[in-house]
Length: 361
Image (cartoon, rainbow, N blue to C red; front, side):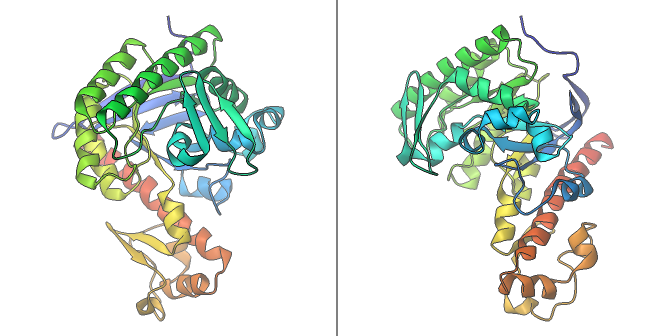
């Protein structure tokens, strides 16, 4: 029996007759999320270079923070002493916390996997930390996020089928342990499953089936956006999404380019996250319509127009490409902030506009 609290509920409001896209509503203790939704990443309890006030002005609906990073610094006990992540970072809307599974992938030279869990060597000071499925749940209980993710193995690309199958077996055991512990402890946050299986469709199907039988409140597609070509990314989103329970939220982890979001929404996916809007901004790249431009190019030196004259974000209402280029070339911190505001606004509102088109055919 699942311990789904009454403040959590997912409803599908409208389905698009021309695709698998759907518009929904996800009720959480910190507010209602209108899906599909782009989740802005605030890995270390902050979106790099952007304040929570600015995020509210952009109308960001939900943030994502990282369990691995916050467990190392400042530590879950300190965050719990503040009353949880919301109070610690001054954010009153929903928060999803990742489990550290992506760090299994990205810190491959600093971790060791066993059936019991993962031993990480801290990227900060080299100290060792042992993550088990239950410990990851306990950390996230202290963080008091609205939605949490179980420990999993995000297998690198490319990988042999034998390697992916071995990782998948451990991942399923970890997720089973996590969901059982979640129920035993009557944890009020929602716990989503993470489907793995690499670039092998039979393993993806096996994973979706096994996790559906465990009856999680929501389902994520993991192990994508790890270096594979766009056509493979799209192929596996299109293949995997219909395998997940239709009545529950579907989440593709780690995608954030405008074209990827639009494709995934058409496959019936509801939630997405990516560090890309702020990461691109720090490298001088901004979204304009459906392309990206590099602000440091000489052609923008005397360009007195905004990044996008159809964009209503604070940056485009107040600053020119020439000014942004000047800030970036001068290595002024404000450059990253202003361009991050624009990039986040672009993705958040692109998804909102797609939702509007679903509701209005």
